[in-house]
Length: 386
Image: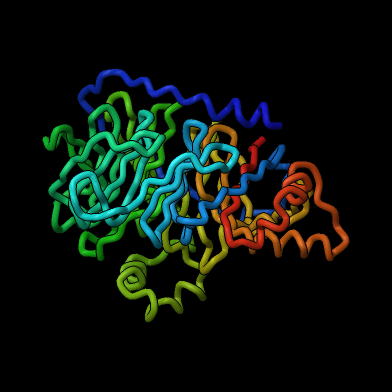
């Protein structure tokens, strides 16, 4: 198991060719039908599971884990509470902690976004209007000031790909730039240009093996795609049929969710796309059908649905416990999920009390970390897709 798992994590060479004049196109809409879901067994989808327990620094705990990226055999986790970035090796040992330390040169006070590419970590502080670059050991490399803020960014080869969360201020959805010079812009026909600004939790999700980066547009049914070789760009619209929010209701819901949630709950509308990211031979989409009811769609390379199911309907014949968890990241053959260690402990205890047995990697993991799981930590679950 460990050999196959670890070998996959070393397959990310960052070699890019020269950028050419971009091309722009819109792909066909992808229709998704929740009525085609059916109960599934875990072994129909996954061949194995691997568990990683993240180490704790007692002097600087990971308080509120947020965005998680797995790349280059490392795990990067943002602490949304203390605005620190943790770097773990693939076994869960702390490799570096990049701390928020102040407002001076080479310092940041908050993490509004981070991304990883070309063996570098990019931390964006919108309050200080700058991005700081670090190596994987947490050593400072450079600081870059920027003139706009409130967006998601992705960096590679000195280029910047920016999503603007405030269309009225910037007049476009995406910018390609280098050395503060805008090279190209891209619009994707947002639902309403006046919607309140919001960024997306996952940000830009790269697939370096396919030389592609994707981005889910917040509160929409659209995912944008950018070719790392030539800046070719396009977007895909997902259509959920009768579960699409009617446009006016959708806009009202986004502007004031508290007072406009009845129709959303009653009709099980889809408010927005959740996680969209790469797999070795395709991609995966997570979307909530109404309130807190996640469904997964696994696509081939042409966005044809290969598997779809309601997450809570999975019968876990792989190792018995409840697999209803949020996706943290995906890469190659793996979907990576995350869970608080206390909740993980309670789920395993529930399985044992029911008379079922846990097997394989989970049994080994439970024996090793059972007591530590009560310490309010983070567990990552790597599920290998068939």
